[in-house]
Each structure stands twice: as C-alpha cells, then as structure tokens.
Amino acid sequence: MDVGLLIRYGKLVPGRETEAVELFAEGERFFKERLDKGVITFFEPFFLATSDLEEELGFHIIKGPAPEIFKLMEEEGYRALMTKMHLVVEHPRADLLTVGEGIQAQLELFAKVRAELGI
Image 1 (tube, helix red, strand yellow):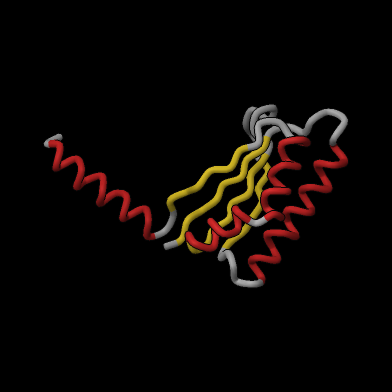
Image 2 (cartoon, rainbow, N blue to C red):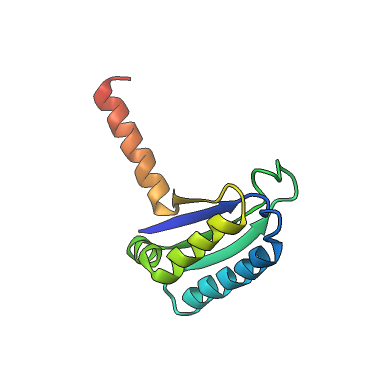
C-alpha cells in the first residue's frame, strides 16, 4: 500500500536565505533521484500563493510504497535534509499521509468501529 509524506515549511530564517535556496535544490535532487530509481512513485514541490506565508510558505508531497517511504525516512541523506531544514526555515514539519487505497481502508475501518460502538 502506498503512503504519502508531506514536508511543510514556513518563511526562511533571516540571514540564512542562501542556505535555504541551496537546500531546496538539494532536496529536489534527493527526491528526484529516488523517483528515477523507482523508490518513490511521486514527488512534487509546491509554493503557496496565498496563506499565512510566515507560517507556511510551501511543501513537498512524496508518495510511494509504505516500506520504501519508511526506509527513505531512515536514510542518512533524508535525516540530514530534515536537520538542515530545521536550521534554515521556520515551522518545518513532516507528516505521513493516508493515500490511494488506504483512504477506502480507513473509511471501512471507521464504519466498522462506529458500528461496534453503536454510534
């Protein structure tokens, strides 16, 4: 089953703008390499056009088989990217996402548990 990984970030830390731009390029290379190798099935960065840009400036969405995403998150390269991100942008965050067939499975589980609870 596929899962998603949502990596979000806010404004650049003042004085570290150059490092943040370099990190963005490094992250693109990292994820595109894994996409080309078939480790992940989807990768795309996004910048927000509207929002509280202090809190959330952009995000990356990554999708792939759950075991591969979990392995990727343990790679030293991924952990280094995330550590750098914490130093050059405000409000860095990474969240796992339910995607694809997992959505239906989650809805079915919700209905089953709801019925068991009689609500």
